[in-house]
Each structure stands twice: as C-alpha cells, then as structure tokens.
Length: 203
Image 1 (tube, rainbow, N blue to C red):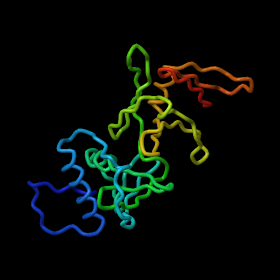
Image 2: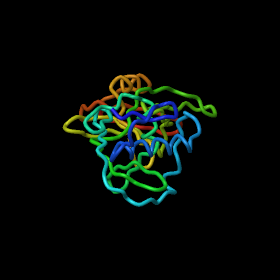
Image 3: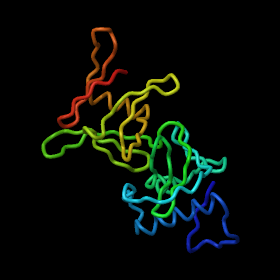
C-alpha cells in the first residue's frame, strides 16, 4: 500500500519510481486544494507532457491497486480520483506538469448512493460516487446501460468523458424512484425522470 508522507512522518529514504510519482501528485493536489474538500482542478486547461506509465490499476470492482497492493486509504483514492483524465480511450493522472498513464479495467468511478433532490421546484435524481463526486442526472450526465464481460450494467457520465458504475444496491434504490414496464417484445424497461429528462433503461 502506498503511504502518503506528511510533515509529522519520519522519512528514512527517498521514495523511488512510481511511489515518488504518487507522493508528488498527492502533495500537489493537497497544496492546490488547501483543504480536504473534494474539488476538481481545471484539468481541461492543462496541457502537460506525457510521462510514461505507472503501475496503478483500477479494477472493475472499484479497487485501486498500486505495485500489486490494494490502496486501502479512502482519502488517498479520493485525492487521486480528482486528477483522473481520459484521452483517446486511455486513462491518466494529470497535473500541470505531467500526465501519467494508468490502467482502468472498466470505469474509474462507482456510484454508491442515489437520492431525489428538489431544485427550483423540480425533482432530480442525484448520484454520489465512492470518490465523493455528486452528479445530478441531466442531459449531460445521463444514466445508461452497457455490457461488460457479458453482464448488463448501469452507468452515469461523471466528468471529462469518464463514467461511474452504479453499484447493485444503489441501482435497486434507483428502481424505487422509477417505474418498471414491459415493452412490445416482453423486455423489462425502467422508466425514470430527473427534472425534464425522461430515461428508459432496458434492464
């Protein structure tokens, strides 16, 4: 597991390779955020050089693995998720000075909570990811179904071309906000509404 250094840690040796890259990126993020609040930097305004690959792997179940070990610190995952970037179907950690490729099996985010919220008199669906993104379902952030390794799975667009898998328990909650019907072919369809957006999902 990668351990983030701080001013109170006794540093015995300089980290090398991927460990140093992760620590440098983590320190940069904490410096620009100046708090532990989940904020997304203006990644689309940064154009750094590509700096190769890092042995960082986001599995389809949402686990983050670095150098063969699962990163257990949720705060660390949230920090790095804030600088995730997708470009030409590849995923990166991106700062103003470097862009390092990582591996993502499916999508980098997971939705673990879905609620209904009132905004200016209209009812919207709100998704919250395990990485603390809050996404209102609308035209730019629709929910959709897609196959992954033979399994039909629900997703929502989050940011910068990246999506979140809606976890099973959260999807059951989503179903309670909609209506299940059968189409002419006998297929079950989930009808949802978020604000003025109407969705039909084939389950």
